[in-house]
Length: 314
Image: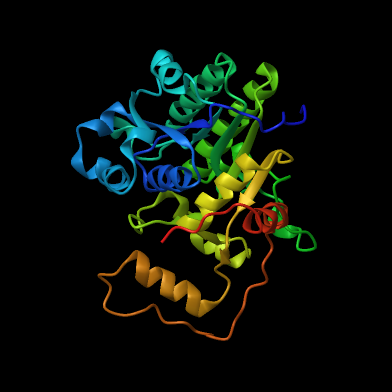
């Protein structure tokens, strides 16, 4: 992969896609605080829905609206993507399933690949785009048939989930994220798009519930020492840091907590299912699972980022 170009964009304008999600709306807010002008691209299926737009409405109430331009987006309409990217020097992209296909199943991978392909191709055709931050998932790293036997080495960005393994065990979220990210990387390298990916752990967002598709296989993730979570604020900072650091490249595994203690697992279970009247019983509350996953690569970037121009948001 070619080294990233110098971070020198006079436009100081970036696009956040999809800006209606919790991650996207908080990214808009953080970028505005750092002086960017933001193109907030929102999927057309969400424009009519008050609930879907709630996070972005909060952003627009708090920030100077003149620095935010809202675009209606259809990830399967190449031209709507190009319109949102015009004049931008960077893109923060995260996939949000369309309302007519919101459940992760064996077909979601095809949907997500199509969307990723359109986005990366649009970036390749937009001369002003210098860098793309592609949001992926830790589930595109942790699932394969051999890693559980390799106790001597930690999983990191160099690892990929095995597509056949995911399909055989119906790990549809992992399958979708893996094939979409691989497709995006293949096209980015072919088109010369400067891209980095952020492979997030389970995102602890306000809308997190027990039905989140990331949680399929949670017990196995826990036992293997690879059940990781990430706070929204940390995830947003990670996105901005890998964008602004000119030396970043490739993939970045992103998490700031590992669920490896029985009490922590029980607490998370209670958070995911608050209607439950009691915490799950733990046979051995002192048991600690050895962590077998590493985010050292991202931590090195984040240290420099925190010492730099990071603006704290109340």
